[in-house]
Amino acid sequence: MSLTVESITAQEEACRLPSFDSNVAWEIGNIIRTNVQQKFTRPAVVYIAHANSSQLFFFATSGPGTLPDNMHWVKRKEAVVLRWGCSTMGMRLSLQTRGMTLQEKFEMSDPSIYAVHGGGFPVKVKGVEGVIGVIVVSGLAQEDDHGVIVDGIKEYLAKNP
Image (cartoon, rainbow, N blue to C red):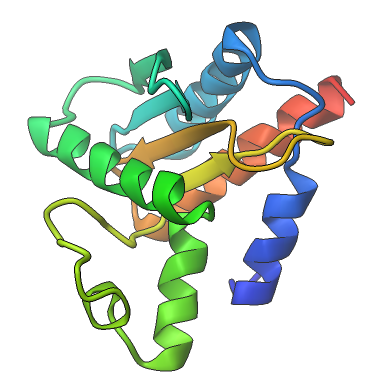
């Protein structure tokens, strides 16, 4: 499936959770980590945090070989999700359709703080306004970073409607 702004908006809506706490984050994080281990040879970081407090709920690597640079990417992707309330892939595609960079659209957007590469995803809860948490994967191709998050949330929702 080719990703579009519309398809990512639909993914974000379909991935709304019935609730979110440290137990939910743990389950989703483990699903994502296992899926990365099973589907990819490259290692990745899986990071899940609460939006309002930045409290870390889940952190793991899928295996040896991640680098300190992965955490730099995690924090930059997280910053986009928390500031604009959307996935980094959605923001990236939205900017591409306008022929703009993040820095051109938001003049003060420092590339050392924000990264519009796939792999940052907002946690939203049904009936609750705004972003409740953030899930970030770093280490794979950006489409794969994004895809394993969406697949992981959908797998969780299939077990926990």
